[in-house]
Image (cartoon, rainbow, N blue to C red; front, side):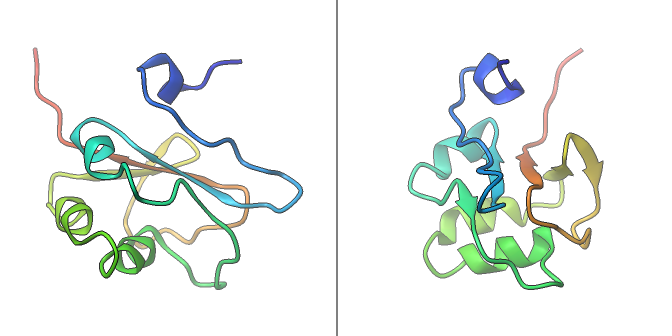
Length: 103
């Protein structure tokens, strides 16, 4: 089964259910900025949120972190748009969505 990222031409790392990692997806220009960013995160603290993940990237990926901080960027967990303070759990899929335009 192809996932949304693959169908849009973006690669992704699938969730490894045995080690229960969080799968990170970056779309649009965020995907370009995330070339060297991790695509999954292993051990999470109990209170990890998308905002926390963004903060973790700040030191090693400042340009990506800055782009993720733009107010128009949305975040989804398990294909549902959520707020940046949404708690994350092992096995979740976290996607960062850039602003889109069109008509």
